[in-house]
Amino acid sequence: MADSVSVVQPDDFNSIVVMFHSLGYKIYIKSHPLNSAPKKLVDEYKISPHNWWDVLDMTYVEHIKGLDAETTIKEKKPSFVVGWESTALCEALNMGVLPINFLDLSDGVHKDVYPVSDMSLKWPDDRRIIEGLITRKYNYDDVVKSLRNVGRSVFISSKTL
Picture (tube, rainbow, N blue to C red):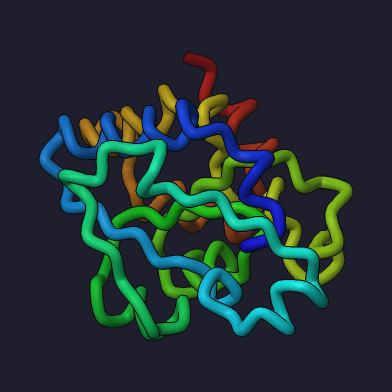
């Protein structure tokens, strides 16, 4: 969400961008709609969005504007969706795309609606599993199914690396 991006460190975010780019992935960034909200909403929600373009090398990143998460996932057909406090992570898993989150949201407001920490891989904690998925050490569809059915903690404990 736009009002919580400051808790995601640019170096952490950059590390995932660099990893995926080095492995030949095309990378898209979709800003949260509140990032370009009118001043009245920015003030009302106390939004202080992080300007990724000032802190990251955006050479390998395409910025997507104007689409919601569901439309973006349907249109771009990504292999992974990275986010934090976002319905995009829920949309991703529901559409068979692996969600990766940056924050421990186990006590967050979304816990009852969508337990993000239980139903997504966590960066950088699960980096080895994510790399294993990319190098096909793990079966992508099996991981999606596991996240949907038993959650992250059961899947992680069964994958001793």
